[in-house]
Amino acid sequence: TWNNTGYFYFRVQGKNGSYDPDTPFSLSVERQGNICEGVLDEPSSPVAEPGLGTPRTLILTDNRRLAAGAFMSRLETLADRPDVQGHIVNVDEDPAVRALNTQADLKSACPYAKNLVASAIKRIVDAYRKEYPSIQYAVVVGDDNVIPFFRYPDPALMGNETLYVPPVR
Image (cartoon, rainbow, N blue to C red; front, top):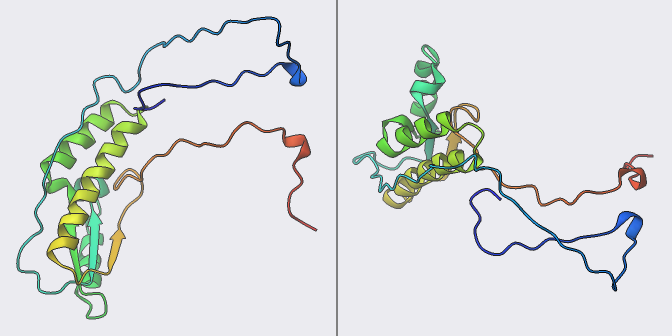
């Protein structure tokens, strides 16, 4: 259930669609632990770096997690191009992102922990977009371990794949 709380509804269906409306049944649900226990959000109000002029591209990375070395000079060359007008933001400099990344590393099985990191990074992007309306593009440099993607539950129900026909000729 991730971090969802409240009422939960279950659908019960008999084998091969069988049911007996006159025979009651009972359902019990038991929680066997919480992989996200102790995971807390780190509130933040990031502020965009002042005096950047009119950047068009926000380039997001985490220098500590990327370990790019010489790659950073090439990234700076890209940011300096007149058609890019980029500004590189090292999200690891934000205390909330750093703390949330540490927490997520300790709770690697908890998708909610990585969502908190992604939310803190989004707050950084929002701060820059508010300060610099000229920003048109956001570039993420690194994989999910560097700049985490949001995790969403898969709402797809279980289906009988024997009836699935791939859309091919």
